[in-house]
Image 1 (cartoon, rainbow, N blue to C red):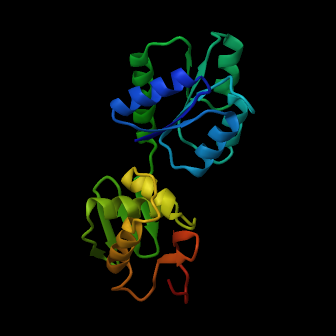
Image 2: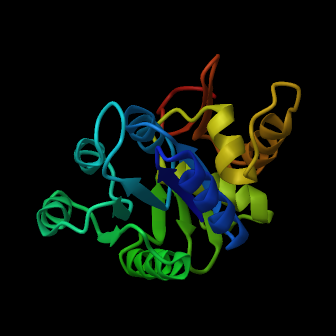
Length: 227
């Protein structure tokens, strides 16, 4: 599970990253409202922990931007136990609210509850032409034929299916599938794409996984096109 923490207090931000990482989450930290907004809009996060008081733009403005295009749970933090702030955040689309100071165990419990709630509404089946992906059964099928995918190939395909029609960079794929910062000296993404393409595309006439030169990869139907 990947979490974005948007918190400008350096010590608290580092404490949250350390604690959440030790709790089994992959965590990114943004220190300003603008940075938090950009991270959240560009990334594929399962949840955002969002402080209200931030430099640049505040948490409410970040939340407003997210709710125009994203549906991941947002847990807001505030130094003020102010009813008006809580109401404003919840009405703006926040899923939960926690006032500072708080017990770390309570934060983790609230995060886990939000993630469980989100799974109830999570899309579990994706389809593109004759390619289908069942997240619950961990099964990929194309043209009626079950595809034999490794765990990483399945995770890569799942990300591409969730974001079908969008060009995904090598950096994003490395971060989301391998939980690693992209290093231009490694070809791990290219190798994985090549192996995945050999299974989902090579045996079939229509190619679905395409390379966009200088940008990344996209999964989409291009009738008459080539990858």
